[in-house]
Image (tube, rainbow, N blue to C red):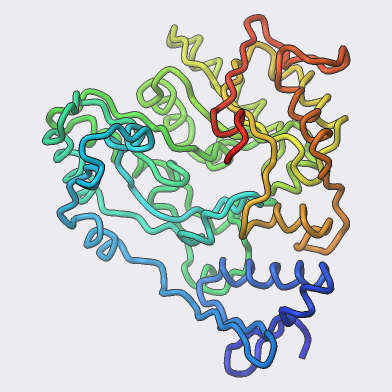
Amino acid sequence: MGLGASTPFGTLILHSFEECQKDKRAFAENFHWIETHANMMHPDTIIEPVGEGYVQINPPFPPATTEEMDSFWDLPFTKLPHPRYKGKRIPAYDMIKFSVNTHRGCFGGCNFCTIAAHQGKFIQSRSQKSILREVSALNDLPDFAGNISDVGAPTANMYGMHGKKPELCDQCRRRSCLFPKRCPNLDCDHTRLMELYKRIDATKGIRHSYIGSGIRYDLFLTEDGFVDPSSKPYLKTLVLDHTSGRLKVAPEHTEDHVLQKMAKPSFRLFEHLRKEFDKINREAGTHVELVPYFISSHPGCTMKDMERLAHHPALKGIWMDQVQDFTPTPMTTSSVMFYTGLDPRDMTPVFTERNPEKKQQQKSFFFKNSSKKSQKPLQSSKQTINIAPEFSKKKK
């Protein structure tokens, strides 16, 4: 029985641990099947032989229902740090203490992300009543001034989204509902999310509710227009009512062949987003900024690709906030590419920059002051690049 074929008992047998130690291709093939089953509604039991025994991965529980989600979140959490911190300031807590989670899971399927491995591909949403109870309870927290920093989740605008025909989702083996194309079975109506925002803002004691989590703009935009009638109103309310000065999005790169290795949509979609974003700002007389995130030296990305990113005309005048040099992390397709030099989705070779100096050179395209004349900053009339601390300092 070949790799990837299931036994009659619903068991998937992988290459052995010893094979993977000797052969990177075997390692990549194992990852491909583990990743495939991690994104299925009804995965098989997975077996990897090792020595005279084996490692067994049992299928996870089904995605939580709305009632189950409410039962978790409606428990009497204090939303305060553990008493052992004894009043000490916790920077990570400062970011989330006045935030509200609306759902779990993400069906974006980005190759450098582990959300699906942690929370699953299928969206598990709380009810509006449960969310509004938590919103109302924020008024009892110390120092709460009526501003919610984030109404979100791994991807904020996936709340309540699911397949139009659940029976098709039951059989689906796709890792992403958005890449390489948006699934025609996906219900990506943003109406229920806008209704939730209205009810949150109408809650006593709430002055503003912001969206601090990431959004997927390919859920409401195509390269030619909007996805459905709810898309344009959603983008408008997102920009004008729920963005605290800066709307952060993640195109990740400008070159389509690099984006293909990331499992991200074409950069042309970001260009369309910017046109619509600028139009909303212009018509409303506002000055909200659009802040894109980018990654350098991702598998498939060359020095020339970074040079093209740095000089892309669609980025002129944009204020860069955070940039990242690709760092391999466990349980991601991108890290398997980095280690094996193969794309585990089809086993094709992938150029991967592993030389630390050349990786630094790729990252240097994000900086204003470059040691090489050919390496210029992203075009901007007021360019300043602030690198996030976790990326600008080497972790200990």
